[in-house]
Length: 398
Image (cartoon, rainbow, N blue to C red; front, top):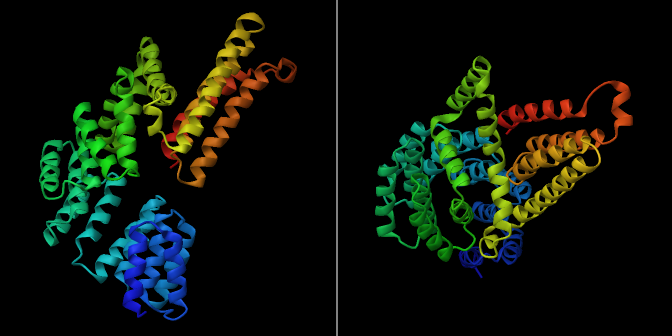
């Protein structure tokens, strides 16, 4: 079997997601053709698909040692770095790929996606348009163009662009999912469900479609629906404006103290709606199937914390009011537990885990007065300070 026949066989195995067999074929071929760029690309791509980013980068470095000017490897390097939220590295890699080969539209699509994730929406739109000029039929880059327009509040233009893309390729799961997202942003839950359902029929493993359909199911709850609308609004205005609004509210509350209950109501609504909505979804026998394994795990932990909070409240009424502190600690711990599922960096995971530990430790110490009373401090105060610290840390630590 010549090298071209081996390439074709490996490509077919990858398309069928028979990754282990494909890796065996690649490693076998590399013993004969160790410097072949295409084999290193396939090997790295398989590790990327398996989300084994460590081995993906090792394979990539080996490939670049033989082909340091390979635009395809730099393109793949950017995708791996983007998957790990290493935005600066991903941008450097994709710009290197574009420098080496400036005529491939998908490179501009990836660059646009990086800019979208870093909230540079106008630049993302212009970058996607550059890609579309190279290849007007590039579905991925067209989706990035629509997504960047939506982030700027241009949902009407975005939807029209996606409808045109669907006319040409109605079986594209990514476009169907993106159109579902557009309608979800507009508040048209029915149409959003339709497109997410089609996307899941085409590709049952489409995470964007699964997450979108899950949000549609949760949106049946008016509290979650309003929170979703608020999150879309905050997303569109950008992080700088988000912080400006937060600081403005804090200053306003200090100037007008009677607004404090209203502020706390909004704060708790924003915090607890999503974790609690996952708990309700967990007990829906149909919607539960949309939860991923990790979401199910963290939802079960939160159910345990909520049950513990309820039991502690009962003890608070019958034994000692100190149990209410532990109840509050269990309740507020559901927030970082929920966010653990979307924590991609070790730094963020450590931060969330540390706050969970501080919250629960404060609550446990509260029911052991012989520990804290001799030192003259109140664990409730520690818990409140920790919660305030968490609100700021959660905004800055990514």
